[in-house]
Length: 169
Image (cartoon, rainbow, N blue to C red; front, side):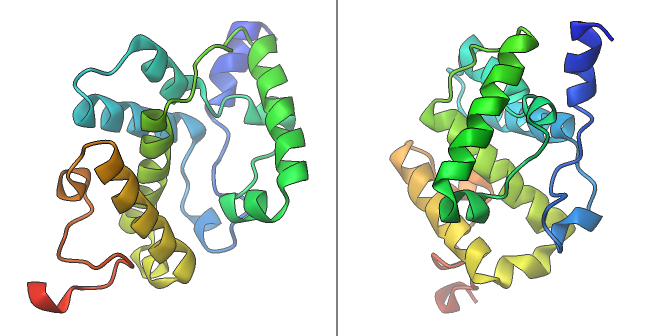
């Protein structure tokens, strides 16, 4: 198998496989990466080639590392998370795809794309504390990046926990 084929194949890895609720909603790494790229270009007119490269390649190392680790598990197991991240970086280097630096904007669209996917495929999950906290963090991050949360698909008719705002009714 050539490096080019391995790099392409890595995009076909299925996301959310370790999440018992979300694993029934098929999304490939390539679909997630494309969604991130669209969000980057749409939200940041001054996007850079480096940021676009990071959006497209950032998760391709998961195949070489042999796994993807959910965000809550990464926070609970930082040592294991760093070992996996290191294996992912080595895999990206072996594929010749290293070099896309994660800016705050790339980190934001990574999380926003995941949130929007859950919103589309499993909106009932957004009531869970984990996703309410994720939404609140996205609203804060959007504002810090100079974005209006409404423009990011995080309408102000919801409070910081993703619940309908009584004033908006």
